[in-house]
Amino acid sequence: MNKNILLGVTGGVAIYKVVDVVSRLKKLGYNIKIIMTDSACEFVSPMTFETIGKCDVKTKMFHEGSHKIVEHIDLASWADLFLIAPASANTMAKINHGIADNLLTSCALAYDKKIMFCVSMNTNMLNNPATQKNIRELEEKGHIMVSSNSGLLACNVVGDGRLKEPWEIVEEVEKYFCKKDLTGKKILVTAGGTVERIDPVRYIGNDSSGKMGYSIAKKAYMRGAEVTVISAKTSVECPDGVENIKVESADEMQKEISNRIEKFDYLIMAAAVSDFKVANKRDKKIKKSDNFNTLELKENPDILKSLHKNENQIFIGFAAETNNLIENAKKKLSEKNLDYIVLNDVSKSDIGFNSDYNKVTIIGKEDIFEIEKESKLNIADKILDLIK
Ligand code: PMT
Image (cartoon, rainbow, N blue to C red; front, side):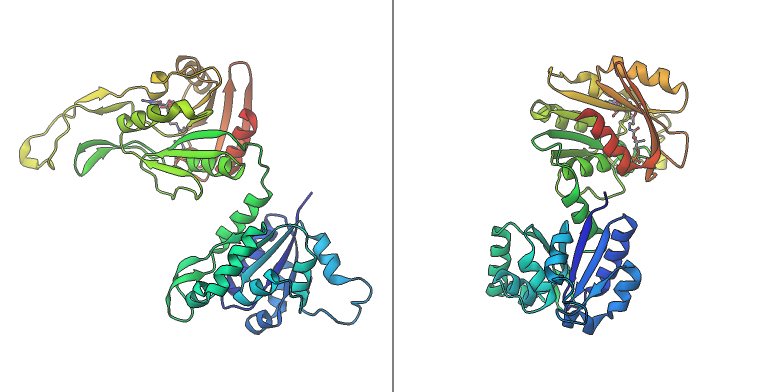
């Protein structure tokens, strides 16, 4: 069943971002009802939210017809999440002190679950001891603070207080609703493509972006796991909330994994690891005049094969294949002593390397599961569903 979000909008110039939040939440299938304070209506008309959210926008505590239901109680009990964005210093202060002088704050008083506050205000207002005390006390009461970002504010000050970006707010909402079935589990994920140096400015690499590994890390974190990612070269940012260890080569990746693998329940090797490194690597940039004509290669360690797996651990590898897909993947499953191998066809440009999508076959010792083309985030969820 789709979840119900009651969105409280308070007065602040960052409201324009919240219109985008509504649009994104709507696309994800959430049911939305919106309350705007009088100050919020000074910045954006309720009609903007009504149109984007295709939903009710309430602005007044008392209006014609409001006697038919006790509206603030009804809205509070309808909501699975009460999200306040932007959350002004004034509204947070009122809610912390139980003041209920408008529809939004009355709903907050009647709401018996955690409220999610997306903080947004001028830096000095945020740093004011009164605001800091309210934030602290609201957190102590169990509410969720989505802290602000740092940057240029509307008042031309550079500092804390910028409302988080719409995608970040939506991610917080998704995290809130996400099942927490991996709580207590420790998961080590690898991501990206290893880099094997030829000289200080040149290397052998591959097209891995890190998207597959980071999607697994992000979903595992959202589902409650403690996640560490060892990442080689990536073209996307590591998700928030996970420990990130940066490496360059296969040797470095092997060292970082073997140093800590003992304490993890799962290892998920989504990184594209080079099978070879350069034997005649140079310390200085190679010049044309150096007559460097031959690149000599030597084999890298096979990281998965080199690890000792204890009986409670689950190791999952990925197989990047272009031909004889199932046969090659099954060979890797047994040779690398894996519990599962996730096979992807890397000869296709719309999945696999660098795409936001993938299409995989998960092969276990006895089972085999086909997952049709989906976003890497959804694929990540399905891999985690299987192994948890
Ligand atoms: O990062 P993206 O752009 O999102 O792309 C994702 C991906 C295509 C890189 C990913 O889905 C993937 O397939 N990763 C595995 C790439 C790879 O190295 O595949 P392989 O078939 O060569 O290796 C099999 C397994 O052994 C892998 O888990 C690999 O990490 C591991 N390996 C490989 C070589 C080596 N020396 N040591 C290893 O442990």
